Each structure stands twice: as structure tokens, then as C-alpha cells.
Length: 169
Length: 316
Image (tube, rainbow over all chains, first blue to last red; front, side):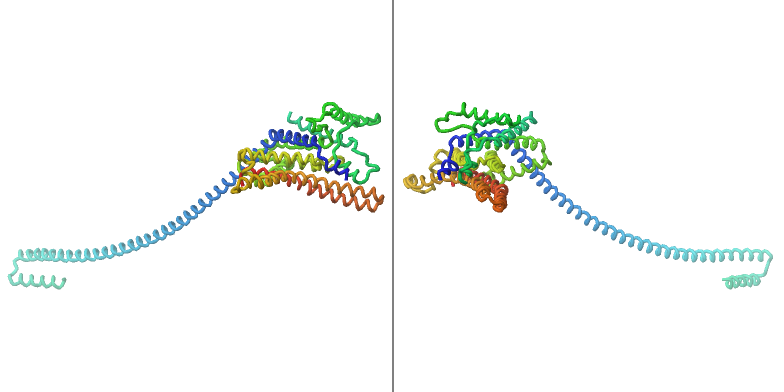
């Protein structure tokens, strides 16, 4: 086992020191030239990715909120529209009924008035006729009187005339 | 300028790679047993002069020249032991670590430029592949053990550690190269850094008294604490990086030993049938190393280091 002691298991202090020197030189050079920029930029990227993910999450939540709002607004608008339509229909119905009622009432009142007017016109015409008859008969009577008729005759004439009028009426 | 740096790194890495291909193997394989063969492949050896054959082609001559230049540096500048202990001569294992380090620089510095340029993420698969790996290390290894602002501070260390071990492990699986992490000194070096991390973070974040307060549970009488519990906890503190050292070393070495022994069986039996069987078996082990062990051990070493260092952030 002499070869093991002198070979495999030998610890050479010089090599140990060379190891430490080599490693420390490599460490220092890489620290300055490689690890710091790499770790910094990787950290920065990780930070950025985290920020972006947070941002995306926030945006998603906001979008969801907006969507919910929109849905609510749409529902509201639908309801409102339905209300407006039904209200409009009701009002239209009311107005229609009113108009019809009014028209009915008016037509009735016009008919009534026309009837009254006709009545009045008839009465007036009758009265006119009566006066006309009186005037005519008075004229006739005066003409007859001027021709000297007898009192009895006159009387008889008046009666006759009156009777005639009565029958006309 | 930014385009030249990766080019230079690639060229250097390629040259280093070729140096390993021509570097003389350590020891003499003929005559030695399986133990010699395995240790020859799996142990470190100093880069030495190689003979430049006049019949070699120009590329090989130049590569051998680079090899000899390193050997020359070894013999002149680095021949003395540093402080009498540290033999700083450049070895094959050191070169492997440099290669792994260069791979790290060559991959991640251009990657940083590309990632910085693409604010919304690059579309390149190459960039995304490394990016997801970095993210994985950040989220699976660092974040569970460090909270808040500490995670960002600790990430570069553990990213470097993870990729350094990973590259070492994978480079060791390239034929002709060596597994730097399959050596106790290398894994020990990394574990020492973890130990320094544990102690350093503990002392800085919880004050110098951490050495006692952070290790001994509350409510224990001081005498009992200092006499009995503190030594035990101290041993526990030392055992943590020790276990890291052994685990990575043993895992990376064992696979290679098994692969080499399966290959050696062919030479032992001198039979085609054994050859077919042993090559298939060693390929299976190789695939296991490639797909699982190299990956898993880098992860385990890093995640345990993160747990140990992270746990000394707060009193528990």
C-alpha cells in the first residue's frame, strides 16, 4: 500500500495553495466581470416579470370589474327600456281612450246642440209664420174693411181666417 | 477588445490541452502492477522537460517548447519551496485547474455581456442553458441557506465554487486530461475555503465570541462548556470540511479507478472476450460519471458549503 500513501492519498501543500490561489483568482475575476452583471440582470428581469404578472393580474381584476359593471348597466338599460316601452304603451292607451271619449262626448254634444238648434229654428219659424199670418190677415182685414163690409161679415171673416190659421197650424 | 478576450482564452485553453496530450506520463507503467498504473494516472506530477524529437512536426515542436518553458519556470523561479512547505512547482493538476478556471472565464464573461445586452432574455440556447444553470444554483443552493440580502452577496462565491468543481470534474473525464478534484490537496484547498467561510462569517456576523457562543448551546455551565462541549463542537467544525474533502476526492477518484481497472483487465487477460466485456463496463461507468457523479458531487460540495456557511450567519 506504499503507492497509495505516496500517490493517491498524498496531500501536497503546494497544490493546496495553488488550488486556493487559482480559485480565488477565478472567483474575483468572475465576481467583477460575470456574476455581478448576470445576477443583477437576472434579478432585474425576475423583478420585471413579477411586476408584469402583478400588473396583468390587476388589469384582469379591473377588466372583470368593468365587465360586471357593464353587465349591470346593460341589465339596467334593458329594464329601463322595457319600463319606458310599457309606460309609453299605457300612456298611449290612456290618450287613445281619452281621445275617443272626448270625441264621443263632443259628437254627442254636437248632435244635441244641432237638435236644439233645429228645435229653436222650428219654433222661431212657427212664430214668424204666426206673426206673418197676423200681419197678412190684418192687411187682408184692412183691405176688406176699406171696402165697407158689414160688421157681421167682418166678424165672420175674422173667424174664418182664424179657423183657417188654426187648421194650418 | 471584447471579441479578442474570448479568442485569447480559447487559444490558451487549446494550447494547454495539447500540452497535456504530449506531456510525459509519470512513472513507468510496464512492469508495475495495477496499482502502479492507477496511481500513475491519478496522481499529480510536476511538468518536466520533454525531449524534442527532430522529426516532430512544427506544431508538436512548439507545444513541446511550451511544455519545456513551463518546466524551465519550474526549475528556476519556482524551484525553491515557498516558506519551506509549499512546493509551488506547476504540475499537471495545477494546469487542469487553470484550464477549468479559464473555461469559467471563457464561458461566463461573454455570457455576462450577452445577458446584459438582452433585457428581455436572450433567444440563444447557449445563453439560456447557462442562465438556467445559474438560476438553479441561485435558487436551489444559495437561497435556501441565506436569507434576503445575504443571498445576493453569497451567490458569486457559490456560483464560482459550483462551476469550478463542475468543470474540473468534467475535464477529468476527457481522455488525456486529469481530474483535479480527484486529489486530496485540491479538494482540501476548497474545503479550507469553506472552513474560512464558516469561521469568517461567524466572527463577522456574530462577533468574536462566536467561537464559544456560536458553538456551545445556551444554558450550559461555562466550565462544562469550555471543558467538554466546546472541544467537541470544535472537532465538529473541523470535521465538516474534512468530510467535504474526502467525499469529493473519493467520489471522483473511485470512478476513475474503476474505469482504469476495467481497462487493465484487457491487458491482464489478453483476451478479446474480456476486452469486449471490460470496455462495455468501463463505458458504463464512464457514462455514470459523466451523467451523474461529476454533476452530483459538484452540487453536494457546493450545497453543503452553503449550508455550513449559511448556518453560521445566525446563532442556532
